[in-house]
Image 1 (cartoon, rainbow, N blue to C red):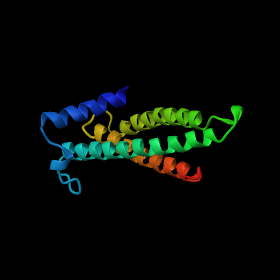
Image 2: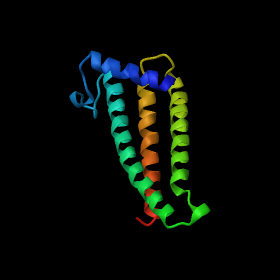
Image 3: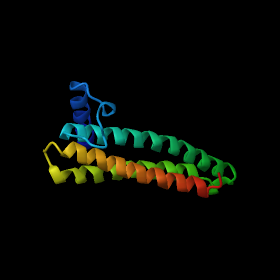
Image 4: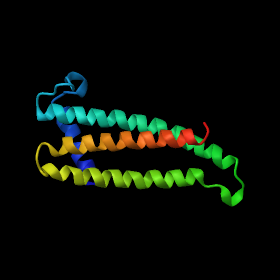
Length: 135
C-alpha cells in the first residue's frame, strides 16, 4: 500500500512539472526529480515487458494443462498463484529497499528502481519457464 502511495506521489510530481522521462536525458539526469522520473519510466517499461511475457508463459501453461489428464492438470493455476505471490514479494521488498532514504526525496527513486530491477528479473524467469515448456 505504501509502495503505491510513493509511486502515485512520484507520478503527481512528474505531472505537476509537465516533465516526462522522454524530456529528460536519463543517461545523465541532473536533479533528483529527473532521476526519479527516469526510474519510474524504467519501471513502466519493465512492467509492460513483464505483462507481455506473462501472457506468453500463461499460454504455455494452458497448453501443458490441455495435454494432461484430470488431477495432473494445474500448470496454469500454479503460475497464477506464483505470480500473485511474487507481486506481494516484489512490493514488500521494494518498500523495504526504500527505507534507505525513508521520508527523503530519494525514496521514490529507490523504490521505482527496485521495482524495475525485480520486474526485469521476473520477466527473465517467466521467459525461461515458457522456454522449458517446449514453446
